[in-house]
Image (cartoon, rainbow over all chains, first blue to last red; front, top):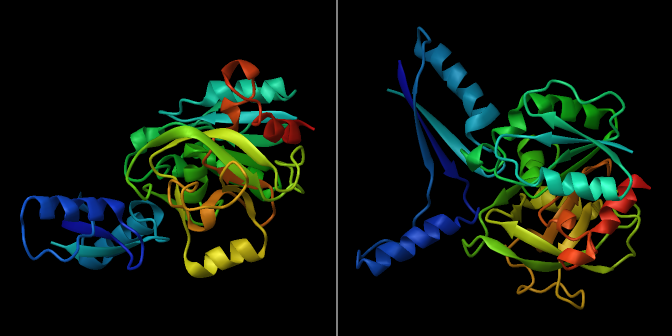
Amino acid sequence: MKARIIVTLKTGVLDPQGKAIEAALRSLSIEGVDGVRQGKVFDIEVSAVDSTAAEATLRAACEKLLANTVVENYAIEIL
Amino acid sequence: MHAAVVVFPGSNRESDVVRALRRSGAQVSLVWHADHELPAGTDLAVLPGGFSYGDYLRCGAIAGRAAAMDAVRAHAARGGLVLGICNGFQILCESGLLPGVLMRNIDRRFICHRQTLRVERTDTRFTSAYTQGQVIDVCVAHGEGNYFADPETLARIEGEGRVAFRYCDAQGAITVEANRNGSLNAIAGVLSETGTVLGMMPHPENFVEDLVGGTDGRGLFDSLAA
């Protein structure tokens, strides 16, 4: 089973990299970009037999390692 | 004082901290990240600076979950002393031994310069050789040293007086200019609730010899070895 985990910064947490990317887009004359927040995507193969079991595995992966929940949120998508 | 310095793949400041500890009279041994135990009789576990695991995922994230960190957590739970410097501070935050997280510096630059700090606490095992409010001259070298914690956590840290060091100017004033990485409340070093775990971004181990420009870092190691 394939899954995707998306880790993003929580609202209110400063994202200097996102700000730099936003400024770079502006310098490339790409109009209409009001804000950029950078996150991470993990494409994961899970051996679980059903999506409930897969989600439990992936939730544990996020809580234990993939996200720092002090500053990051995560979303799990079973593909 | 028996100190155990934990070395991770990518640690690079272990020799300096070993030297600083020995200079202050500590007996020091090195522990590999895959080891499950600290040497018997360890009083102080030290996590040195560097780029453990290449800073992959997040600074300190993978090291924070290494086997040796289970031993460090057990040591801390027994009341043992733990010191994390630079990457070691990031590892302590990632491992849950200290609150908060070290984010990318506010201006996105890797900073590497001399830095004055104000000593905020002298009644700890790490800082007793300093005087209250003393301004010490050490070094910083990091890209992710911007201390962040949610408002409740920050209020608790401040309320409990758990800030050991703040970035300051040469006169001891806390200014925006002196806080180059953008840390909340100019926090440079944080203590655990018990006061037995200290994480700090600056490098006191850089400045323990006149030969290399200063000795203000000695106080920390002298405090520990006293």
